[in-house]
Structure formats: structure tokens, C-alpha cells
Image (cartoon, rainbow, N blue to C red; front, side, top):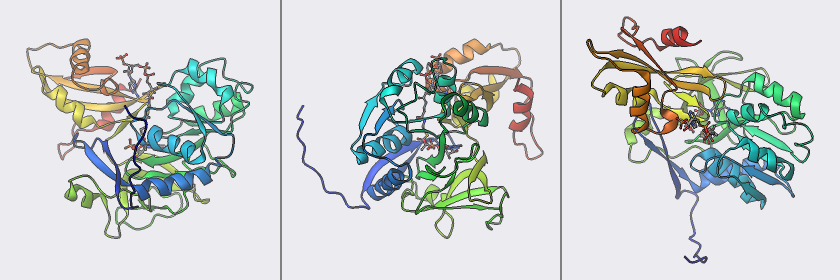
Length: 357
Ligand code: MCA
Ligand code: AMP
């Protein structure tokens, strides 16, 4: 293989990447990101997170998602920084390399796992300048414990594959736990009610965004793309949140039926379809239940056909051969029927209440 290549000139509007994300229907969608989308965000983050001479990135994230592929790598590349690449997150390895690093990015599970290790302390983090968390909600408890143990305040930020990074707690100003910070420079973030009117401070609504970082649409899905944008060209994130009086955004939920497990998105519909295809099954509902390590864990609730038997272990074994490991339910429950509202929609909130221990 040659180590030589010819640089191909690209225009800002040229497509740079198509990133596949799963959807509420369980069908993948290719989010089209241009060079301008990626470069505008990389430049903003370089400034916002204070990348400087001597920085060393400790990189333990998977390289097939925006977080590891762009957010972490682009910062280091743009800054000409050294990266310590780990094949995967492993608390032992991270603790080993922390004293040689200055910046680390991770999903909340990384910080939960590091805290479980006694070796995580202030001395080991002496050379560290910044710990960043994103992709899933960072629990207040993790934020506080990490601060107490290491003296470092984790900086939480918020983004999506379709948009790259949208908001961030400040590098220099106050980092507020439980919030995802302020809109990044050049990015407009608004929270709207059901009538699409701007919400007041502390009022919960849908988060919509605009900026040079927002993707061009879903590959070969013009109708789906049109649905996701408002008339005035804001992208509907599907996340629900509120602003405080200082302009810090908090994410309080999602309008889409999405589970985030250890930073990976799981759409219940995809798993329900596979379970429903099992001959013993009448129907199923997949829900997310709070989980100490993964934040949320995928769990399945199943209604069986009369005169059939099926146990949780068999369901899990079958699913393991059909879907990615992180999508396989950690727990399976059997019920005689699923609770439904008058519209016939399964009431997942009731199932979550019933099975959350
Ligand atoms: C692995 N397993 C999981 C997960 N990962 N189950 C649920 N949720 C997961 N996230 C399965 C394994 O296959 C295994 O199954 C069992 O759980 C235990 O595995 P374990 O060894 O604990 O897992 P691991 O290999 O240590 O992985 C956990 C992890 C990893 C390190 C947290 O999932 C991870 O690196 N997540 C980061 C994801 C990420 O980069 N997300 C960014 C996308 P079994 O025992 O049955 O074999 S979002 C994004 O890019 C946007 C733009 C953003 O905002 O950042
Ligand atoms: P993805 O589609 O994999 O890019 O995941 C994007 C989704 O991750 C967003 O729509 C949010 O629901 C979620 N997300 C990302 N960062 C955060 C965060 N800091 N807190 C809560 N949710 C987050």
C-alpha cells in the first residue's frame, strides 16, 4: 500500500461524510454532512475548548460515531496535537495514560467506570486540562463525585450526528452540572412549544437548531428531510429541553422513542420487529430502564401466544445472533397484555414504572 496520495480539492458545500443513524421506524437514515459542516464546528470547538500547545488527547471512543470520529479527533488534528489512541475504553488503560494526557472526551459511562476505580485521584489527573462528556445525559451525581475526587469539573456538551456540536458549557465560565451549556458561537438554539412559539425561561419545549454545522438532509430521503425542518429552516432535534435565565440549556427528555445506552442510540421499533417475528410472540414493547453503568438499559416486555413457552435466556440468545450486542435487552419480562391508551398506543411510561426496580 502506498503512503502517497494526491490531495483532492473540496468545496465547502461538497459532501464530506454520510453518517448512518437509526430512526424511529427502525430504518437507517444517512445524514449528509459537508466539509463546511465539519470545519465550522471544528474551528468553533478549538476556540471554545481552549486547545493549546502541548495538548495531548486521550482517545478511547469508537471511531464510527461523530463523538470519536470528529469531535475528539478534529480538535487534536486542527491543533496539531498528539493523540493516544486506545482500541476501546478500558478503565485500566485510561488510568495508565491519564498522566501523559491533557484532554479526554467520553460518554457518561466512562466517567461512571473511572469513578469505580480507587486509582482515580487528583494526582493521577495532574497533567489533565479538560474532561468533556457528551452523547447521553451526565448524571448530577457523576458530575459531583468526579469533581470531589479529581478536582476537575467535567464540561458537558450536546450534539447530534446530524448537527455535530450545538451547545457547550464554557471552558472559562461556570460549568453547570445537569445542563449542556450555552449555544456555541454561530449556532442558534431555540426551544418552542406545540404552536412553535418561543418558550419563556424555564418553560419546557422542543429544541430546534440552525447554523453552519447543520447537515444537508438524509441521503435519498427528501420527504423525511422536509419533515425534520421547520418552514424557517430550523432542524427539529427531537430533544426536549429548557433554557435557564443565563442561557444554559438543559435536556429534559426526547419527543422521539429513543433509548441511549452507554452513549449508543437504540430505537425500540427495530428490536420490537425482531422479537415480534419470533413464532411464540404476539407482540412486544421495548423500553429503557435506568441502569447504573449504561445510564439506560434496553429491556423487552413480551406477550406470548397461548399454549407457547419462551424464556428470557432464549430470547436473548436468539437476538444476539440477529442484532448488535448493545441493542440486545439486558432484561426480558413477560406479561399477559400490554397497557394501551384509548388510541390503542402502548403506554410505555406505565411499563417503565412497573419494571423499574
Ligand atoms: C457494550 N455493550 C453494551 C454497550 N456497549 N450494552 C449496552 N449499551 C452499550 N453501550 C454490551 C457488550 O456487547 C457486552 O455484551 C456487555 O454489554 C458488556 O460489555 P462491556 O465490556 O461492559 O462493554 P464495553 O465494551 O466496555 O463497552 C461499553 C462502552 C461502549 C465502553 C460504554 O459502549 C462505548 O464506548 N460507548 C460509546 C459510544 C459512543 O461513542 N457514542 C457516541 C455516539 P455481552 O456481555 O452480552 O457480550 S453519539 C454521537 O456521536 C453524538 C453526536 C454525540 O453527542 O456525541
Ligand atoms: P446521535 O443520533 O447518535 O448523534 O445522538 C444524538 C442524541 O444524543 C441527541 O439527540 C441527544 O438525545 C443525545 N445527546 C447528546 N449529547 C447529550 C447530552 N450531553 N445530554 C443528553 N443527551 C445528549
